[in-house]
Image 1 (spheres, rainbow over the protein chains, first blue to last red):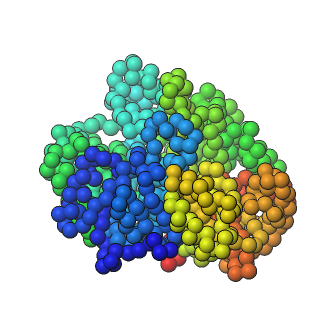
Image 2 (image 1 turned 120 degrees about the vertical axis):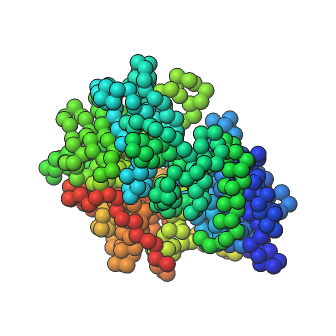
Image 3 (image 1 turned 60 degrees about the horizontal axis):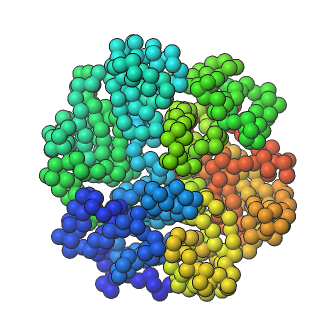
Length: 300
Length: 323
């Protein structure tokens, strides 16, 4: 397998970024890489085939070719995977060939990134392959030790139960469809009709405040509703936020946090492919630096 | 109490209901195709875990009373996995049905009792290459394997394997084995640039299917001249099956790997060679009816007993793969 070469100096000297053109997260991390003496190659997920050259002789030998650059796996210092494992356009996905290619790319990236001997953000357990976002029930199943960090949640297919719960909590019920990441307050009769039609998680919590935080290994960046940097509410909350990643064995994610009665904070959702669009420039920069540092530090 | 969750048209659901009936074990059938009209769930999640019930025409089952759930996840309304984007009515219906499927699936993932098998534990079957690396960590041999989009690398691999190479998908989609023939190495192979594929050195030996049920092991030999015995009929070949035994360390490795993957019941495809046992894949939702009928092995009885055993508080504890 002569094609699978290491760099002439045998160095890990490139960041590999899988995602899409124009993603601020990929761009800022690529800037970080270059300013620290690394190369950075972006693989735009929707435009990979037939341009991508990829060969992997299991367990660990291989190389990747993109345009004129060929990188042995041993030359890759770190991987930032911002892709959804869907290497086709929405139109192509409508075809059986498009869906087949998606299944194959998913299978490839899941196995290959798991075996890469460098930092991978995020290296995913199979339970997370199809779950870019985790709702309360997902988090409870995947990280049982964190249940105290999750709000009380009710799921029912029964109309009477929905009405009873809503009456009991005087309309203070947050509705989140089980199939998506949205949330709605259910205060009108029309809201009730939606809840009865589309089964969802009903969260009974008197909300006091909201925050989001971007966690990069042990570093937590809190943002207020306007996307600017916010002060950490407490060191306990920071520990809880970091513990989520340790339980799921991922390095980068965003948590949506809600403060309930007595100032106690709960996690409403985890997004392991968070967008930086809504973050202020200072916040974006801080998050990118945290990501770049992990990729430079090495080790699994 | 045991809940059997699926649709009646599924032969495995029919088998498990019949087996539980036969053994006199208390169970309820939960028809996923009739949620929410005739069947339903209500559950809540708090710091102490999950509470709630299954609602069926036969009665209400409190989650506290459950010892086991047997569930087969299927695209039971013919919609799941199909594109629905161009038809708003169809997409709305698909969303509605997906939400109900989630309400049941998420509950089952949260239950502390035995579940055969949790959806969360089933994803690994979508990457055969991932499974192979897990199997290698448990001591199984795996065939020399190349994953590639580069025709020249495939030709080089073909030569290195002396022309004894098969190819197959990386995922569970179209997962049928074919032999790579010399005539394939020309223009036809250029197609690999459009989609990665998995190429493996062809291993000679006898196919062995091992079913693990908790800590029990059932092994079967499949004898066929087809490239893939599971699809022997398509190739005009026959398959003969008979009960066999695997060495203790292989059985233990199968059980340990199933536990590592979070699977209470698994179907593991191996090939016995002169050098030992070579791993191919793990099926998290094995159709053991096929094997039970052919050999008389009491697999469904073992599954029924597993479902009836006292609760063990959550999914099988994942074991670290050996270094």
